[in-house]
Image (cartoon, rainbow, N blue to C red; front, side):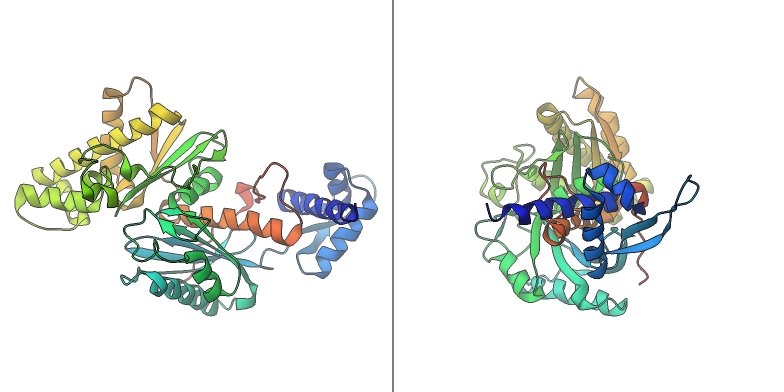
Length: 404
């Protein structure tokens, strides 16, 4: 019973912050209408938040009959989140404020040694970004790491991540927290991407949405009924293991996945080499196809054919309203157009497919979204009763280009 006043205070504080995040600049009278709290309670909470540097006065209301009122909004640079998109070939680190504005960004090839070397690399990139843009390290309060695999909450390991050496053998969460010195969250990178597209991209307001990232590997993020689908062991969406294309019983398929073996980067390179005897990279294959190379065009045709089958597998089970394609291969218009042409030939219902609007930043924006919700819970009260992530309206969250 002694905890009731404290818990009540936390819920009140969260309600006030929710109103300010969603409606700022906003007056205390408007907060009272939205929350049902007394003006005295609101005044006390706002005063405390202002003293602690989380909210600030922004002016006074105008254009209304009667007395003007002071308005308040969130101090967006009161804290920063390190949002990380870790891939097998490249790692991107961004620092975002409480409005999800990207203020600093660093990109580098992923350290091939893996394990602790990658942990140290990501921490160094985050601190370099902070120093370059004169952001105090003490203001970085949380890191959200997007990884190409399935995070195991019990052990801190990242499973099903063949392109990231060592993460399946170590407590990744603990390693990051020891290196950063603050709380770290690990999430599947494509799960973050679908959240990013749902908030700021071409999936705005869509409750049933799929995101497929195709590049070095392949993975998918899925939202059903407005909720992210993670599965029993955070492995939902590991579509590289669909039993399509290669033999799923082959030992190699247990590591990379039967589907990934026929649709991702290595498959395209190997397919082109088999047709021509030449080993070239994927960008060269796309360039050659545009230049009229029939063998390169065949590689794109076959890749799109497999990708269409993977999309149909998702559609048959989850029936998303839209499928968003991302990744270095999935973003290419040559793949999108081929897939759109193939889908009506292998599935009886229409499937809307679009290229990612956020591109390479989709996972970063999703990481910022998860981080904002976590910071809101940690700093301003208790978890929301319905588990919602508290985010500023999409129209007011400006994704500022980093000045590098």
